[in-house]
Length: 65
Image (cartoon, rainbow, N blue to C red; front, side, top):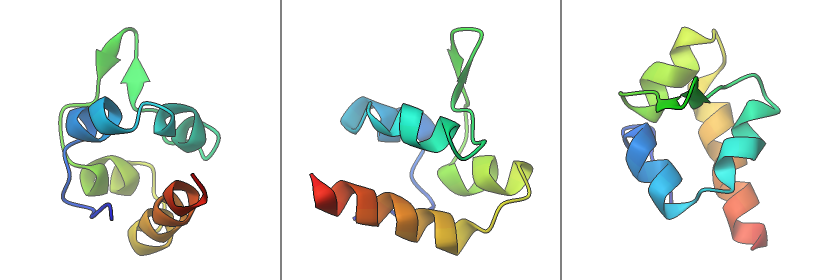
């Protein structure tokens, strides 16, 4: 289960497929070859998107696999 306090680099190392999943929601984790250095919560908040809803969507996506 993913939590919002996970660092983006750790998230993508474990689940690289989430990069596309998040990008489709306007949450860009990698830009110009650089990973966002911070937590998933910080990244989602910076886009003005609901953190709890997005984390729930991520966990639901991972459960499908």
